[in-house]
Amino acid sequence: MGDKGMQKIDPLDHQQRLDRITEIFAGMVTHADEQAAYRCPYRDRFDQCTAKFRCTNQAKTAVEGAVKGAVKGAVKGAVKGAVKGAVEGELPGCEHDGRFDYRSAWESDPQSYDRAKAKIEQIHSNASRLRA
Amino acid sequence: MAELTDIQNEDIRYEIEEYLERDEEIERNIELFARVSPGMQDLAAALIEGDNGAVDQMTRDALEKGIEATEIMDDGLIAGMGIVGIKFRENFIFVPEVLACARAMKAGMTHIEPILSASGVKPVGKVIMGTVKGDLHDIGKNLCAMMLRGSGFEVIDLGVDTSPDDFIDAVEEHGANLLGMSALLTTTMPNMAKTVEAFIDADLRDEVQIMVGGAPVTQEFADDMGADGYGKDALACVSLAKELIGAKA
Image (cartoon, rainbow over all chains, first blue to last red; front, side):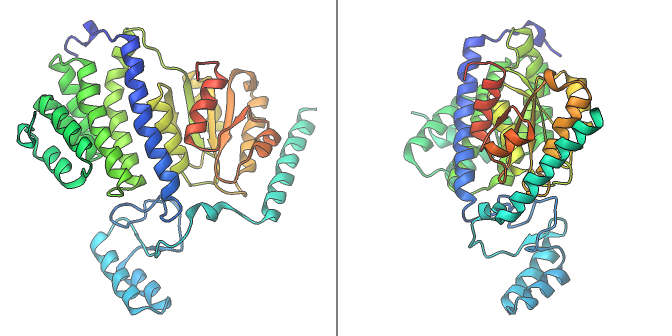
């Protein structure tokens, strides 16, 4: 590949470069956290959902979007969902009004934490028993 | 003093005109891109667009032409990412677009890494990353991967729904000294413990430092699962990764 084998990069200069990249990325990560308070991070600039999982706010097709909007009891929602579904095709539209803290979606009830804790203990105990 | 018209690439001119609002950032970017070669302007524009195929091709072509790797990084990739950061801060783009740009940057860096390596610039460490089995959430993990790469780590991202066997295979294949697992659900979080146990069964637990993260995960859970560390966000993930491998934080 050309004379790239001849190229040399000064490690100290490169560290400064990494510091600059880190500065840019750290700003992004901080902003992403702040933004999660009012916008789902899977929602792109075209208000499409990029998540690989199903979400109740997704409207995949014109019909689906229209039905969802209608079910919500808002004619505006039905029309919006239909237009989005028809125009965008591949990615489902996000139908959420944006007024929620995305981060709270993961704050499950204390019982689910207890169940997770019990499950973890069980996994360790089963593994120890099998090894013995 | 450079003018906007001194920038040859139309897309870059548009980005500056349309999305930059602070005077000092407009001035700085006009000065920067006005002195940058047209080829590097094109590369930056492709990165801002999140077009990883174009960034991949342009970086290869630039190296073929003998353009210095440092020029490609500074004037193409990092310059472009600077604009992406501003657009994100001002809410013109969102997390999915930022991650697309980060993927584009990685596509370019893939061709730069052999040159870095030949120059004695080694990765800080090698990290296997993945969301655990049964979990399809990947934003947090992707932000961690982006931050780690930006900090000089080599990251092998296994994506979502990653089984313990896949984690083990990847650690063995790549000789990684770090493993990062993410879970976003209390129901999938126990699969981190399963993976830790699988590493013990495979006699590989001492070969790799395991860090965990994700919204429901806490330090207490990390301890329960037998992980070596817990990072509450992408910034903490980088500090933890450096700490675990004994690098300068």
